[in-house]
Image (cartoon, rainbow, N blue to C red):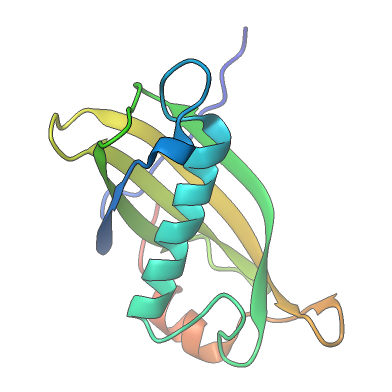
Length: 145
């Protein structure tokens, strides 16, 4: 089976801790894949808030996710505190990638590597728009993979 590869940035500028709740545990007794994506979403929201943005207002426009890559490295269980390190890369004319390194805070084990690709989106006009200048100024040269 061919595996997806994901190169993470060498540097992450933001980190946030999120505890795994019981609602995130699947029938296998560990963190579910769908729940991990929800936690990644939460980490992205916290990252944006740290920079004065929301997902619906980045220089007057929002974002919409266009792709996701998640590589699972180890299990996580109810009560674990996960540290989500977040970086922005591949800033383009209309979007960017958010990269995530997820680490179990207690054990130091890597739980996942992830990337979500987004484009900037005008929800009123229902169309993709250019990357806002303020966002581009902050992140265009921040990380290379």
